[in-house]
Image (cartoon, rainbow, N blue to C red; front, side, top):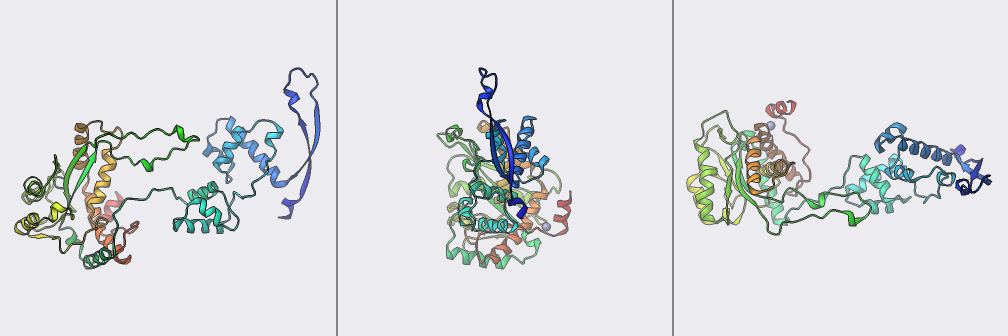
Length: 403
Ligand SMILES: [Zn+2]
């Protein structure tokens, strides 16, 4: 664009600050010659329009929409401070870093973000360095957001192999086999829970203004046990104090596992209906907590249950397969929704309510996702699932998605 680079001579009359002085009757007018390129003039026009729209009360996004051009929030916010004076409107010396990016560069930026590079590093590794905020804007445009990494336990080579073998054996089993699973787990709901300090970002100028995240001195919360099948849920069991294997056998397993064998209702509350077509023929799953793996618990399961996944045959670290982890995530989101529970009684009430509000469509979807999760683990040779994009394509899941 040769036309753009052509220097244009523009005469501008610059009124000095004397204009604002009341003592001066005849403000001194200084004639000054400016040389502006066409793009600089464009920039002036753009900033003046932004300033006008700001004064009319337009929001940042409305301005972006109205002008229909690629404007950064920083540009708009700079215009906010711009004065209606020539010196303020004239273009400032640029840093030389372009803020508008070609499609090719945009692709490069996204690729680097995929390999976990930070915006600052990305900006510096480009041929023409770009600022951190330009990179962030490009990433936002690509529907990417700054996320904090999830906490997971480390998987070693041995786990990779066991995970691979277990998932490989299970992944092609028919869905009916997965519908026979009773997947159980425990979860602690803290009174102060549901908030991840790292996830909340405050967009302020001064770090001193960031509100404190107050922690309760003593961790107060409720410990619950629960289980799920494709059809519904076990009752929730609240455990007080420290649990040991004996208490687990006496207080948790009879309610969570034995009681469901007597269920006959096909319709009704999700935590009271039949969980399996044959209520005695199900496969019990529990994680590898030391209590669950203890000899007396393993023996009890062998004696009282038709099928159970014993500690020897089931690898540890399969929390990205067992769908109850997803159910806890849904519960956490609902339990701590505003207004947050303020004391233990409210917390308990909320946990119970949200448990009974889980729908059969949810339990079915989560159970049917398991073979897909296993296939993904096999594809990753035992590695962890980062994100699962596959969906169950069975008639029931497709139907549930349309509602
Ligand atoms: Zn399905």
